[in-house]
Image (cartoon, rainbow, N blue to C red):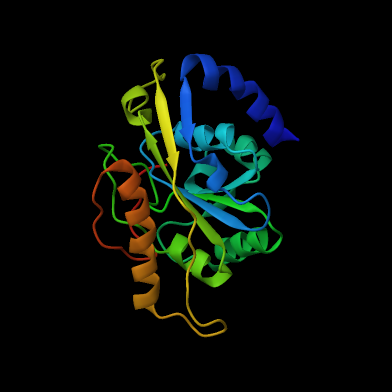
Length: 217
């Protein structure tokens, strides 16, 4: 109920303040487990995706966000999944797989944190691992305009226009029940980011490890 309450409160901001335009929303499956992946350059990004899509999104967020006690209640109420970024996090992967197994939708920013300049960063491998293990549909999304309205370091977002494009869904195609190699996961991670890059008209570099120094929140 908390998620839908926040979604309702955000509706006027979506329509009047940010004038969000969405294309390809129908690419999100109506039922069953799915993963929405997107570029991440602004604190607005999760709210943008959640306000547009008709299904509830369980966002994977950095565990460091839960350390901020003034915001912890909000992330808890939104049913987010905290994940460590400095090392592999089996508990977070397990929880994400449970959500997908129950027919839920994950919201994931494969870059692992906000981009400092609005351009795509190399993908972390956690999202690719989850998608490959679950065999769930992956729906790429590209958010344009959010960085310009609310870049890192700005206290309050400017009003303006934001555009979101959703691409065709795809999923990992490989033999079921077999252990995935790192090369397979890396290749799928790059494929995921390439789908976002195509929607944005950008390029993306190769994948990085499961854990690395934090880039943002």
